[in-house]
Every structure is written in structure tokens, then in C-alpha cells.
Image (cartoon, rainbow, N blue to C red; front, side, top):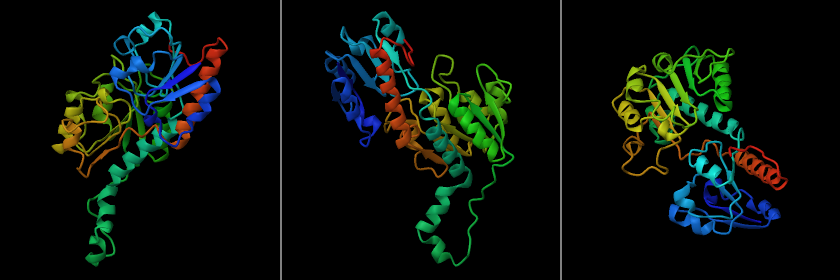
Length: 315
């Protein structure tokens, strides 16, 4: 059996991919353009991807592929209908990054709420040393205890963040397609109006694309902190950046983008140096522990496939 990894660089250089050799030949490419996909998969049985798009256009008439393993939970980069038509199995990995993404989410919120970059720069620059005053309290920051934390998407990650938010003393409200009795669930417009902190954890699909649009951003509180660790296209990126640049948001944290990496023409490029903006390079999912769990889970799905069983299958 031949396994091909099309974007191994996204999995990290410290991940031991040699464990896959027990299945046969393994070819790993750090990155793969759309034009290179078909050739690199011409004789592959299994493909492992993270962000590479797999569809009729990129795959061509490939007839050897039997299984696609997505090294992620989201699968918006794979055309499932086409894979079903071609009888190619598709599996993803669920739950491996819950702790990792929740940790980054809460880190962003706390950094933005407490203005940590401003305070660390005060000491780093020598301003504190030269100031002659024992403490500095500008910019003013506020406790988040007692604030309303709105969570969009109440899956594994959303629930983990909700638990941390409650532990910090926040009132939690959530927007979920199917409301659940153990959380206070509200519609998306109510959440956008009432929340002091909004964190986004919903998958990208036709129902969530541009969910956080210009009108909903305009309805938010002026000092709201917004953090998106879901998918870039869930938000109107230009509207978000306009709002933070114009002082209509208290803080903005983003780890995911419609185009990755974002270019100089991205609205994020114009706000990346603002002190109340925290942009990270799609790393929330990728703690060392999470990446190892992801690889181990992929191997379980391959084992199941070889035994004629279906595991974590989308198709």
C-alpha cells in the first residue's frame, strides 16, 4: 500500500511520520499546489491531507485512491459528493484538538481583556524602569468575572470554553443549531447584542458562512472582544477589521482566515499591529499533544479500513 501526505509541513516537523511506514511506502510532501495533486496521487492508495483541496478539479481521473484521511475535524476542503461518486472513503479526526483550541481561545480573550501586550511592552522598552513609579495602570483593564461570554458553536471545543468561562465567573450564553437544556441557548442576533465576549467555534457550511456579518457586528457592544478560532469565512473579515480599526470593538483575536496565509491585500494585514488585535497563524489546533493524537487517530482509521471496517467516516 502507498500512502501520500500532501502537506506535511502543516503537521509540524517534530511529528514522527515514520510510524506510517508499517503500512507500506510513504511519500511526504511539505506542501502541494492544486496543479500537483493529481500527479502526486497517481498511484496512491491512501492520501493524508490537512488543508489541500481535494475535488474533481484537483484529482482528475485518479482511479487508485481508496481512502482520504483528513488531519483535521473540518472537511470543507474536500468535495464529499465527488468522493462518494468515486467510491473513495473519507475520514476525519474528531476531538483531538479540544484542549489545544480551548487553551488558545481563552489565552486570546485574557490577553485582550487585560491588555497584556501593552503592559509587557512597558517593561520591555525600559519605560517602567525609567518611570520611577512602582506600578502602571494604563491602559485601564477590567475583570471579566460577571461579564457575558457568548459562544457560537457548542461542540466539544465550545463546551470546553464554556466550562472555563464559567470557572472565571462569566455568565455563558450560547448559539447552537439545536439548543440543549444544560446551557442558556439564544439566537445569533441576541448573542451578538448581549455578549461582552464572543468566541466562535462553529464549523463552516452553507448555514454558517458569513454568519458574523456587517449588520451583526454593528449590533455588538462597543467594547466587545471577538475571537474566531473556527473558519475564516464564518466572518465578514473586512467588516471585522473595519470595526476594530474604527474603535467599535474592544479587541479582536483571529487564528483562521479565508485565505491562508493571508496576503498584503487582506483586511487583516492593515490591522495586524494594533495593540487590541491578536492574530495567530492557524496554530490553535496544533499543540504537540494534539498533533500526536491526530496522527494516532488517523492510524486507527487506516487500521479499520484495512479490516474492512468504517471508522470516523464522512463517506
